Amino acid sequence: MMFINRPTGGDGSLAAFLLIASAAMFPTTNTNVVDAFRVPSSDNRIMYNRRSLTGTYIDDDRGIISSPQSRFKRSALLFMVGEEEEGEVQEEMQEEEEEEDEATEDDDSTDSEEADDPAEAVTSYKSKLNPRRAFPAAARPGSSATPRIDVTMKFGGSSLANSECVDRVTKLIRDRIRPPPDEDGNASEEVPVRPRAVICSAMGKTTNSLLAAGEMALEGRVDVEALRTLHLQTIRDFDLPPTTQNEVERLLDECQDMLNGVRLIQELSPKSLDQLVSYGERCSVRIVAARLNQIGVPAQAFDAWDVGVMTDDNYGDAKLMDGTIDVIKERFASRIDPDVVAVVTGFIGHNTKGRITTLGRGGSDLTATAIGAALKVHEVQVWKDVDGILTADPRLVENAIPVSQVSYDEASELAYFGAQVLHPIAMQPALKADIPVRVKNSYNPSAPGSVIDKTGNPDRMVTAITCKRGVTLMDIRSLQMLGAYGFLGAVFGCFEKNKISVDVLASSEVSVSVTLDKKQREEDIDALCRDLGSCAEVELHRGRAILTLIADVGRSSDVLATVFRSFSAHGIKVEMMSQGASKVNISFIVREDQIDDAILKLHSCFFEDKCDVGMIESGQIL
Image (cartoon, rainbow, N blue to C red; front, side, top):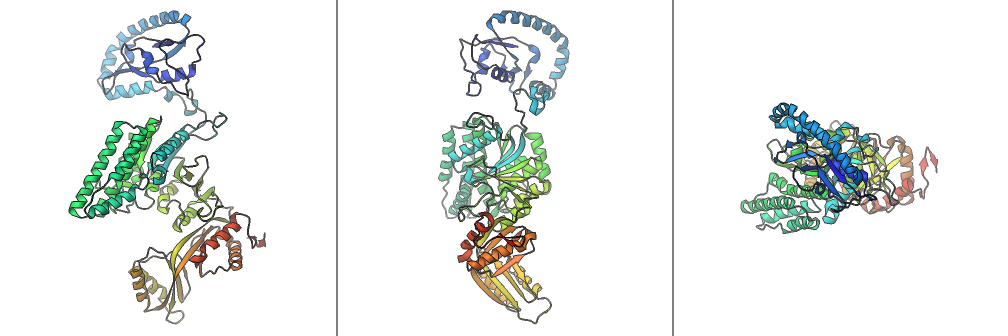
């Protein structure tokens, strides 16, 4: 038991004193126990002063238990009493202590038996030590009645580019856990979150730097000094603990040793590349976790395989193994305190042989949704540098606005046709678990962002406009008579033989038009044309672009009427159109030199109420 006397008329906060002392743990020494509570801050307004605070420690042997470090600890109950009351209260507590001593003698044999099983003793001790377990979350003393929501949060490389960015992100996480008051000092209306996991990419351009370092090693040079400078300077900027610096330096030394091996054997296989790029994420999470701890957010760094991210053996583009979600769930349940933020590497995992693999495009987002699905969080948050999903590319359309809600199908189409949204594969775990994904802006955290869920907003005619540039339009016309059997089969057999995929397709009985993106190699396209020559005439039209409307296809008549009125008025020629396969996508092929004008005109019509040809809705011109 412990007494702390405060001077009459002091302005110390009783509530803050009680909160600090009820959680206090300190060794049984003769040291002035007031030292255990020396934690002044702007929140509790407590200032330590030996002349105004005195402490008296009353022993209680029954509370002692040996920790793994063999230090004796106990919980202390703190009472605030006036100076005139101190003697009276101490006498009463002395009598209680004598009664407890007698009870202790009777319990000695039982205590000895319990001490034989350290694991049970520790469990029993922890259950008595944490008074919060006796209260519902919203009813805990000193807690807010506002319920928290569980989330996973993902931050990409641009959000972690340097120490300034890391500082902003970690404080953003802290402020989402404990929303600060507004400018007028009023309590925030923001719903607090409990981040079960924070998934981090490598800092800035670290992945590209590592790939470049691998190429240099093949040429006989090993240089990781730029990487050392970025990470170690960030550590110095925050004055992080030596343990963090030692861990990061160990990883960078290991990376350099690996590159020396590449230089000597002159080989960099896909398996080696996956290990090489993994050092970026592994350094990043250790720095972020250390900074979170430094600003008062309990956190621990984990490599993805330590929390159960298991993949197949497809180095460079690995897929999650069946059962990974269950393994992640078990690892978090058995190893990670829910109130400790697990800072986890994105993009990487382990295969069944324990080798490092990478998850390919959207890999960090996939890590976030997989962990979110395993933990059944309320939402997965993906933090970017824009206010969510926008109606168009803001680099082209200055008046692009955030879309509050989109469906998984709409988000998938947007991503496929060039918008900076989650990759469709990355959304699958969230889709299967029916967990919404919220895209937010790390530079503007108060913005609500965009929610991706199963329903989207069915009342909207058009959700967004996107495009894919640099495509080639291929027209294929049959040389045979109308209705000849097997034409389409022969065409797609040629595509399969040359391993060429298409973006958009339109077909009739004797002709097929497809688009090929700029990733296709010219020699592969030439080989395809030669193979098709046996059954068809082929024309290539280069310098084309795909303009895609993410729209309600059920209202396609109104959408198309507005589009073609605008295109006709501004001389924009549509060379091909595709609608029907997807219920949320209408695509047009136009010349690339007209794509910008086409997007601007349509955005004005559908989103800015400035349509110069008049919007068509329910067959009427608005």
